Every structure is written in structure tokens, then in C-alpha cells.
Amino acid sequence: MKITVVGAGAVGATCADNIARKELAEELILLDIKEGFAEGKAIDMMQTAALLGFDTKITGVTNDYASTAGSEVVVITSGLPRKPGMTREELIGINAGIVKGVAENILKHSPNTIIIVVSNPMDTMNYLALKTSGLPKNRVIGMGGALDSSRFKYYLSQELDCSPADLNAMVIGGHGDTTMIPLINHATWNSIPVTQFLSKEQQDKVVASTMVGGATLTKLIGTSAWYAPGAGTASMVESIVRDQKKLISSGVFLDGEYGQKDISLVVPVILGKNGAEKILDIKLNDTEQATFNKSADAVRSMNDVLHD
Ligand code: NAI
Image (cartoon, rainbow, N blue to C red):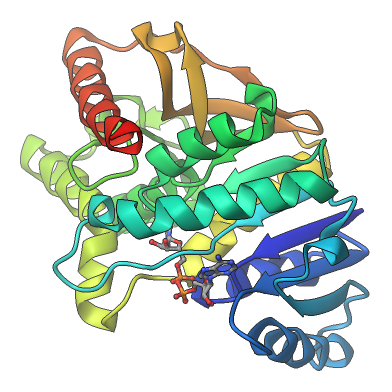
């Protein structure tokens, strides 16, 4: 198994670190445009192999796409992160050029790969990667829901004073502060609806905190987060390469599901060896569906910027 991570910055390196620790691949290529940067990160990570006891061979390269040849999964994290006060959407101009170029180069050497797009604004970048690559829709998947759902569980656990691992909760819609939809009515604590334990006020607080979860961290850290984004991406890679068929909310191209077409949005997806193997078209109530439609409108107008 060979995996490539493009972008050796905060998220890319953390994702690579998780992939290596879990030994998801024999060979892991870390690629960055900045001279020597990926090489340095790869050597640093390889120097943890003896301490952590993993066998994955990590190689860092500067823009050398030939080294990525034959990658079964490629993670794209290259691009600018947001700074305090910025929205993910404001990154579109510069990141669209980066993601398009990276996807084209990757495809030259790994024409049948599975791409996981992390760069923001993710919904639009995933749509762009899909259109640029020409890959079938099950092979281009966006990371956002795995992270937002984990943040949702974190805020629920704070409110319930329980272990996040005992919670089942999912965020769908767009991967933006105003477009994501934490499905509070579907969230459970060991199969009991969390709404039984939380007042309406507490539920609203959890949902609101989840939606601005990324912005809260950006304000505290000064740039966007990386531990949970890196771990969230690695969990998707794991489900794919180990064919675990986990249900992970992920960005996928919709062709009628949830009443939407020609758009990438975050919905519950089974991830296995063929990528996004199945989209679960769960029943939303009228309010949830209306919010989903509004998110789709917002993401679609972002996608339109690509054509301008
Ligand atoms: P970072 O600045 O630490 O790393 C980005 C890396 O990409 C840099 O090392 C840079 O040299 C590299 N890069 C830029 N252009 C490149 C190119 N053409 N080819 C190869 N490498 C290139 O940023 P960070 O924090 O790692 O974030 C990366 C991206 O992920 C951002 O767009 C950020 O907004 C996004 N993100 C998405 C999340 C999600 O849930 N989808 C969560 C967190 C971040």
C-alpha cells in the first residue's frame, strides 16, 4: 500500500503522522512545494519510528510527483489555512489554483487513485478536484464531516459530562460556519437520544459551538487547527485502506441524493476499499431539509466563483 499526502504543513504532517502510527501503508510520500520542507518533516517522523515502533517508510519530496506514482490514496492538504476572523470561503481564489494543479499532477502518476480533499473551502475544492481529475465520484472525497462530527461529540460530551467515545453524532451539509448542520435530533448517547438529557437551550448551545468550532480554535491558536483535522483525515484513510466500511460523514458528489445535483456536500457515507461506496440518504425532517437546501445554495454560489 502506498499513500501520498500533499502539503506537509500542520494538517498534512499530522495526518501523515497518524497514518504512520497506525501503519496504514508500507510507503508514505509527503510532498510539499516548499524546498526541503517535506523532506525535513519526513525525517523527523521517521526518527520517531524506533520510539513508536512503526514500519511505514515515510519519504519527503519537493514537488516531485514521479515519486507519488502508484499511490492508492492521495490526501490533498496543500493551500492556505485561515487566519483569525477569516472564513473558509475567503480562501477560494488562491486554494483553487493550488488544488487544481495538484490534482492534475497526481493523476498523471496515479490515474486510478482515491483522493481525499482537505483544503478549504472544502466543499468547493472537492467539487473542483472531482471535475479536474475526471475520476468517478466514489474516488474523490472531502474531509470535513469527520472533523465537524468529532467536534460535535466533544461539545456534547462537555454538556453531558460523558465520554465522547460513547456518543454517536453527525454533522452534514457544508463544511462552513454557517452551512454545516449538526444533527442534534439524531445524536445518541449509547443509543439513547441526547435530546432526552439536554434542554433546548443546551442543545442550541452545543449546535452553535460546533458550527464555530474551527473559528474558535483559529482565534485561540492564531491559525487553523491540525490535531483533529489530521486525525479525522487519517480515520477516513483507515476506513478505505482497511476496507472497514465505516459510516463517516464525508464530502461527496450528489446526483439526486438529498434533493441535490451537481454539487459536493457532506452526507453520511460508507468508506471502504472503493472509496465512497454508498451514500446513506437518511430521512431529514422538514426543518433539516430546508437547512440542507440553504447550505447547498451557499455552496453552489461558491462553486460558481470557479466559473467566473
Ligand atoms: P499550512 O500552511 O500549515 O500547510 C499548507 C502546506 O501546503 C504548506 O506547507 C505549503 O507549502 C503547502 N503548499 C502550498 N501550495 C502547494 C502546492 N502547490 N503544492 C504542494 N504543497 C503546497 O496549512 P494547514 O493548517 O496544514 O491547512 C492546510 C489546508 O487545510 C488549508 O486550506 C486549511 O484551511 C485546510 N483545512 C481544512 C480542514 C477541513 O476540515 N477540511 C481542517 C483544517 C484545515
